[in-house]
Image 1 (cartoon, rainbow, N blue to C red):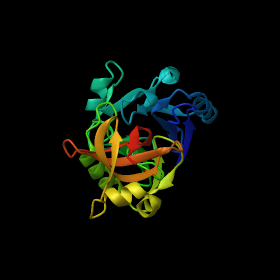
Image 2 (cartoon, rainbow, N blue to C red; image 1 turned 135 degrees about the vertical axis):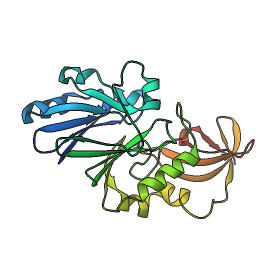
Image 3 (cartoon, one colour; image 1 turned 60 degrees about the vertical axis):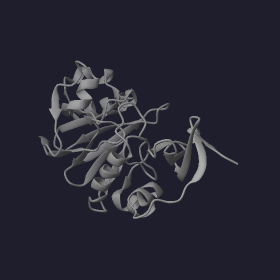
Length: 245
């Protein structure tokens, strides 16, 4: 199996080409940087029957470059509902689809988006999209996000995979399940036994507690916060957090 990715300049989002080494490939997401993947498809003479979508956010669904290949678009039902006329085949949680020598299991992993799917490929590689990144996790206030409880459950599911499982996130560089279990501060905190004590802050003008400050995939920061008004917890971009002096 071969896996190739492109990364967009602005969004830093990834698109992937996975091929079985025997003439069949699938694409995962579209970030507007289709050229290198299309070149690889042509050079290898690949048949590409499918584009798999992880979720509906705009930085993952720029599919214009793929039309000439004639693939069907696969996604979760909730993602399909956000993209009228785009999705051809619905995928459910735990469903396994096969393309040539590729066996791909769909894992419903909400939190960042309601129809978010991760894909486990041949039991060795996980496309985790915007739930789990190298060193950080997905936010829970994006369009159609379902919140931190779902994000935590999705992380638990992914972290139960073997530690050697290679992780291919929706943004930036790959990692492994083992590396994230050991070194990702958000994974360790969210899946730990205790919620840390917070310090006062404001998020978008709302009073809150800052529970954890950590890295984001783009070189900035993310934060785990608890809002004072209703006790809601969320993962938000660090730029939204104003620490109180």
